[in-house]
Image 1 (tube, helix red, strand yellow):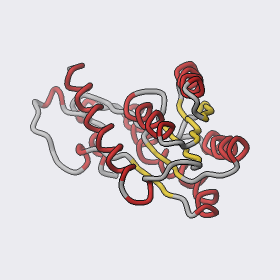
Image 2 (image 1 turned 30 degrees about the vertical axis):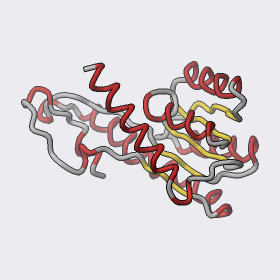
Image 3 (image 1 turned 90 degrees about the vertical axis):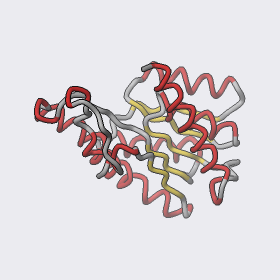
Image 4 (image 1 turned 180 degrees about the vertical axis):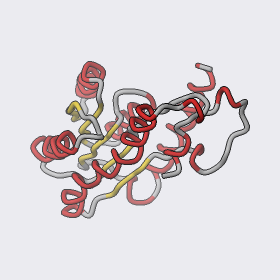
Length: 188
């Protein structure tokens, strides 16, 4: 499982790199980018890529220790990075992250959304609390984040990048015991 997950992250990181290389995202130098879900996986890789390309990054995530460590690592490599503890389901946290971007770098050019949670198990065994957590993070979290970011992005004619999942666009043949109950949130 860890091998497959690692291959997926490398492939996703390469796809993100290709996306950043193309079109309007190619020139990151001088841009201020907000990265939700930056404390691990694809979000972490994206933050490193953005800094490599010269962007200043505002890292958001729930795991403070990992976020602060990543910001310090990026600064040690000569990058410009700050971290703000953020729960995307909380409007005040999203507004605070935008305020951090503006106070640290004066603007927000790109909002990159990668925060998400999943729940594995048969849908019929999925309880309401787990369902609420998945949809609050994967769906409402994007809405809440964008609501906070769009005013700043409008001023810079900025961009929004939303990470999606193939789980939301096609079904997967799996035994019922291993299906992800969070799959419906991926299509929202």
